[in-house]
Image (tube, rainbow, N blue to C red):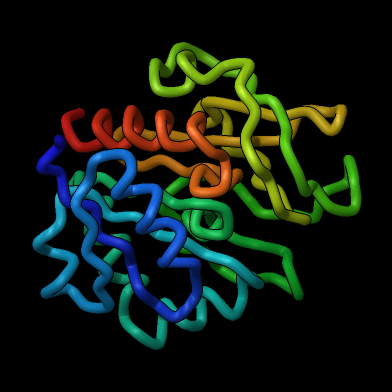
Amino acid sequence: MSRTTVGLVDYGVGNHASVSHVLHDAGFRVRVAADAQGLDACDVLLLPGVGAFPAAMAQLRDTGLDAYLRDAAQAGRPLLGICLGMQLLAQESFEQGQTRGLGILPGRVVPLDEAPWHIGWNTLECVGDDPAFRQSEGESFYFNHSFKMVDAGACVTAQARLPQPVTAAVRLGRVAGLQFHPEKSQSAGTRLLHTLIMELAHA
């Protein structure tokens, strides 16, 4: 079993219980923490998220975790965002107006124009040669979002189709994001989480 500890960033937005469960299934230790002291003890940081971008960013600012995550990424610490957590890594969002994001990855968050809502199972298509996603190409993962990341450039590592391609995953060095919910994607989600987190931890 892996000795890697994943720190779930607790900022009042996110489904920690289900994410913790799948991380345990993938063989990781899990620590839910809301401050630097708790998160500093973790090997990989995981930013979950559900709900609206502006409210989530406000929570991160109010807790000081926005600056903590920026500093962590700049220092080369592994960081993974899931669903809204991935979108928060971007430069800005246009959900309910314009809101600055964490600015850790390039890209903007805009409403879907391929469909009013992307909910349910969709197949992952690789973009590039990232091995974590190449092993999952053709498998189905669970999506639930009405906004998408655009202008992420070479950071895009996987996409789904609606039928036009929509960014499904991004990665830049030791920072990555998943638009879909691996914790709701059964064995495919568990496998991908294990591979991706181990790659981030040892990159």
